[in-house]
Length: 464
Image (cartoon, rainbow, N blue to C red; front, top):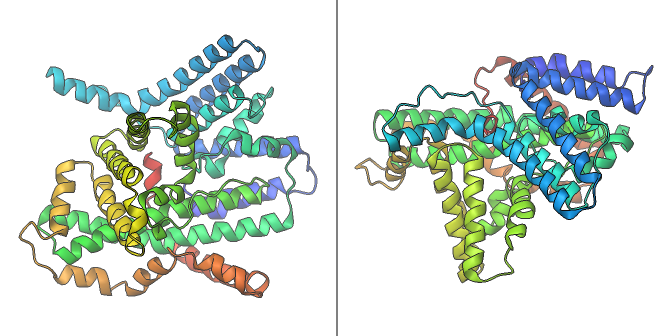
């Protein structure tokens, strides 16, 4: 079920809110069970079979957590951690990577393994990483194991963040599972945050998605002009940001409406002056997960240069493959590995000044070109058109169509990629009590019109 779908906006969410805030039963137990059942229905709506896979994963994670908490022997605790991690990573490998691995093995052995075709459960990367963080937090003493499997189930399956994150740490919401305090202010703030995310998704991301899709389709038919190729790449750059940050805003807002407080997942990444800064601002929950559970345990940066390079290579190889079973995702991760190594070892990005923005945006856009194609040959061909290496013209009618037919949307995309909201909210006294509610109402109306009328409504990160 998609947040920006009619069934979610007009049926599922209103019904759950009415039941959750009904005046007859306000106990924490009732509300937790309601949210858990609603979350399972939410997932089963799109994955009626794989919901059982998630339930099994939850039960196994719950049991492993209990086993670790009931012993103080370090070797026994580590053994249970390894078993739990192996189980969850094994499931992730089977359903996300086995088909790809079989295809590569078939090429190597010249054998047909095409019969091995497994469907990818929606959100498996996200709920697997949350289960792993639950086990790691218990192992390192950052959280207590839950005796009640329903509480573990609520943490993993909570529908606001279930499908596409943000990746929520158990330690962050452990207390809120049983002791959260819903308030009118939280509900209002959460509703406005949800509306902002919905508007990002349906008013901006979906429009840029059409341009990016058209550019990819046209490039497969005949060479694009340099201008059209760049506009297509920039459109995808906007699309993936507003798509994913919009989803994160909706998830954070929904969580707040039910009394949960998730960490921020995006912090205006396109204003970064270096790739290092970009990854402190983009998909924060994923980059911090790899930092805390992979990079630091490997030794982090407190080691020799060769060991630092190895640590970063491991992290960015895993980051690339986390996004999908394809060599282009690995290459995308390794591009960032090379850029980060270059920045750390030379410090050149710190000396670029204002040109650091240009360097970072150029690097990010080119990396997105690799990311969006499933075939490296297509990526290289598209890059060739961007730089005029395909004998293509500088400008054509398609570029004019991309640019001028949606001039206002391009302008809005640029503006809302900048930290204007926090600047205005901090300096305008009337913003929160008067202006923001009115703006949210207008955006909600426009988003609803676009949702009801629209047909093209993809979520990029549902694929991961």
